Image: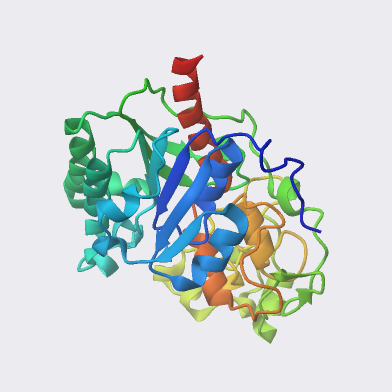
Length: 359
């Protein structure tokens, strides 16, 4: 049953700040900022399929739009001017992937520069951007330096950090580059919110059991991909936190028997119950794509489990009821998302910045 708030229209608290989210996807960054206490007024993304999830979970209006063609005028109309304004965004990270040879001709890195140009033109009170740490090294660091220099030249104070997501309440080992900039407010660095990391057991240990290829009748997103006969034998031979080296020789893949494949131990593996999960990728639903085997059950993690490990709420809505679920599509949405709890910490930092000066 959907929760209803207990406020009448006249009693509902005024928002602490207004957010426009660029490259918003299904709304992970927005949702964290919303949980912190900010109002999401609009989101822009090129993927029209993200509209339902963004609006259903975050409010605000979703616009199917290529940010590369977006104008500052389109963004400015969403801000009332009555509360602090926040321009947020996570430009596509593929150009800065560690597999950079694959993306050497990828022009999407220019979206980071586009984001900085829009931020300067819109002139919001706060700007926050999140991306992969490899952006710091991309093109010898010139892309990131240009991003920061544009904001600083426009009068913004800026802090950036490489956040360890497990230090922010996310049960996952993931590193993200976070930038927060303020125009007229003092700004503190982003600091960890949790002294102890949550484990896989903490996050998904109580979800209903599943078989490979099956879905929970009460939650269609709690669905696991099918396994071939050989992969079912392999996962049965796998131990939590182990590798394919634990298998009998006859179960090993031909590529792992070659010298060039001996070092690739992070695939066809189970997670450990007592540790945070590995980094969720866009193919985290596949047993052979990484350490994505369930710690105990003979299957890969479900899409719901992947979302929870990204710190999405247990009941986050990705698709309308009864709509067919594509592992490829939903996996991409989940894997590309910023962990929601990290986004919530960013929102808390922003709110504390202006509350400190108005109290």
